Image 1 (cartoon, rainbow, N blue to C red):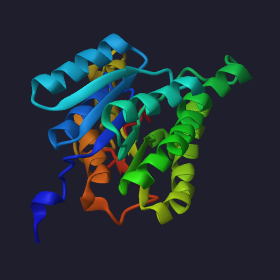
Image 2: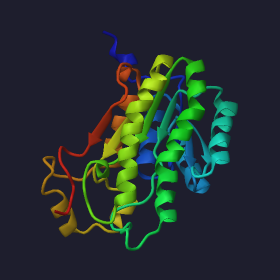
Image 3: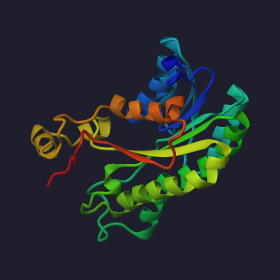
Length: 258
């Protein structure tokens, strides 16, 4: 068996939304390290440019494109600019997400805020899948990776919009696998546990971390690279018969405060 080709992304083009920081940045760098040309897409263009420069300085190939995923014209432009630059699209990492724990009490938010979470987390993913699928079919290779969350299966207060949107991503992914499978396009989702990102660092204390790890067999929080490894698996030929799956990467447990 020739194992050298199983993770080889040479000649492939990948779009990563929310690619400037955290899990998105780690995913961009992981894909580039294995040969992919990477489009670092982010609302913050300057941050996206910095990530792209890091990749290029390390010998990879990347460009930055600004994109507000809640605007359809921005999604269309992202795909068009990618084709203009690299001619093909083979991989899409739908990483952008918003909302979260403690911010979504039904006593405090309204329908407009609830809808905004779905526009960012669900509608944008579905639309980008629709936009890239014809290009993947033409290229003869397609892998779509949607970023879900452990919140999609956990139950907690003040997180109903975010959690239900991530649950929607899981089932949307499973169903779209049937739509895109005949065109040899695989679609899967990743559900990260608690990962050391900037957002988490703003609320994390030693006490909170200890409580979060009480039900986690691997006694540490995740790192962005842990999730990027799962992204690589789904993006690469090694997973060529894997579709419609949701992979939870969480140290074997749940990082809750219960």
